[in-house]
Image: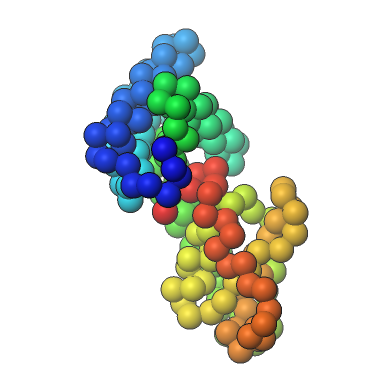
Length: 184
């Protein structure tokens, strides 16, 4: 299937089912108790792992979300193996992504405030592609501009006033649409 083609709801639900089965197997192997909720959001299959045990759930998130990212990548591979198609499945654990998005929005809004106060561009710390996309979207919504610089894994975002950019400057604002936790 061509990447840009819209998948049907049935295809998206099939991807979610495959990923849920895969994740249930991993939870069984790890002897973790957890419920798996499935859905489709923004034309993407979504899997949410929730658990009553705080210790288990924290282990499934990991430091800075590394385990969530690994679970998502493994689940996408499981879906691809079964369907033959690349999946844009999103895996979340206990609302981690929602909290992370809000934190990133706060960082972006702080940078927007600083740029408005000083008129000077603000460079943010290196981020993964999901994080950069959240920042780019927030900055754009606030009427300012942003662009990514550098090479992975040290790629970072600069936030600046719209008048700072020249017309022929190569702006790669949304170069980061595919990310570890990309959701939109």
